[in-house]
Structures are given as C-alpha cells and as structure tokens.
Length: 274
Image 1 (cartoon, one colour):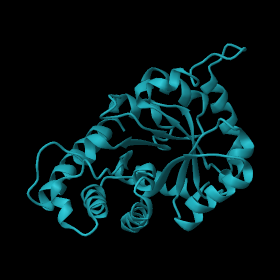
Image 2 (image 1 turned 180 degrees about the vertical axis):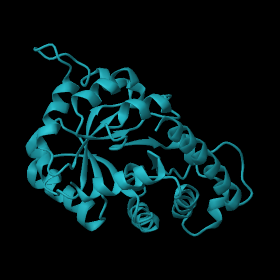
Image 3 (image 1 turned 30 degrees about the vertical axis):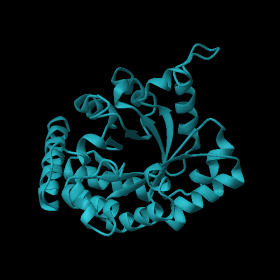
Image 4 (image 1 turned 60 degrees about the vertical axis):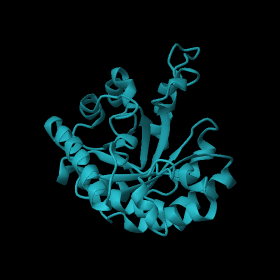
C-alpha cells in the first residue's frame, strides 16, 4: 500500500480523527497580531499547526494563496512544510493536470522538490495527463470527482448518454488508475446525500472531503459516509471556520488557544461517530 496512505491511516486509527487542516492563509484575513512578525503568513501557519498538531491527520496547503504572492509566498509555503509534523499527511491543493510532459514536471515539483505526500488533480484531460502523478506509487493522488461548489452541476453532475452522471465515470476510471492504493477522490461534504453511494461504488479509494464548516457541509454525515469498512481512508478538510476564529487577539497565544479549542470540538465530534 502507498506509504502516504499508510501514514494517514495510522494517524486516523491512533487519534480517532479525520481532521485535515486547510492552510488557505490569506494576508487580508489573518489577525493583526501576526504582522508584528517578519513573515506574517508563515508565523500564522506555524501557530495554526501548533494549535492543531495534536488532533490533525493532514494539512492541505492551497497553493493559490501562496502563488498569488510570488516568490515570498512560495518561500512561506516551503517553510510551512517544514513545520508540519512528520506523522501528518501533507497535501498540495494545486488541482493540476496537463499533457504528459507538463504533468511530469508538475508531479516532480510537488512530489520531489517540495516533497508533499499528496496532490489534487483535475481529470478533464484524461489518463495521460494524470499518469505522471500516479507513477509515484508511494504518494496519494486526489482526483476531483464531485466537488462542493455549486458549479459542480455544470459538468460533474451532468448525465452521459448511458444515463450515468459524469462524476461516476470519473470514479470508475480512478479505481483503475491507481497503483498500490495511491488513488483518491475529492468528494464534497455538501453532497452528503451522494457521499455514501460514492463510497459504496469505490470502497478502495481514499477520500478527501472538503465543504465542512464555512461551506455548510455536515461533519457527522461526512464521517459516517466517507470512511471505509475500517473507519479509515478518509480525511475531512476544515479551513476558514477553523483557522480564522471569531474575535480579536492581543497575543499569538490567545489566537492559538482559540484555534485549539475549535479543533478540539471538531475532533470530539469525529470521535463520537468513529
């Protein structure tokens, strides 16, 4: 089995947690107290990791929030990776895919240069655009399947000539493309009515489930429907509602206490279901 998948499942089993912390770190939203530091975004990320490290299975870095800031942002991303506990899964939420030779460079960037454990990819261009990612059998490749945004109706939920929705065709292909258990799919928690069906159709895939918290998905439904028969192989991403707690903070310690408190509530809710 994929080393990345083994690492994640070991952590899930040990903590009884599926928490994936989304580091969608926006300088316009982080508390003012962090602007006393030379690198505010990195300082913010380090505090979030400190506050959640005891209950988190994974950390998902949305690369757009770093790429938008050019070289300083990429340096913050690289330094942040160094702060994530070794036992936690690291995910590059990059949603990449292109013709084969380009995808090989994307895969090299995220799996070799930055050494992420996992990456998100888009299936629109087919297998040859994703094969370079799947060739890294020790990693995890999360293919967009049924996402949490309203626009999923435009393509993902459209019916094909055979009457099946497009996302089911994607799901079927991903089950064939993986190597040593390195295949996964992104399924939104806002699609809770369909999540259980998708899990039944793909019992062997690893699920990345966004959409809990600010997007309104049910945490309990996502836990129940998302895990496999061993209550593993799924992580539930929480970003904005966790890393941007309400209120103002006079110190970094106050901020970390607020984030830790929210992470503890999420973890407790997960344990009740698991």
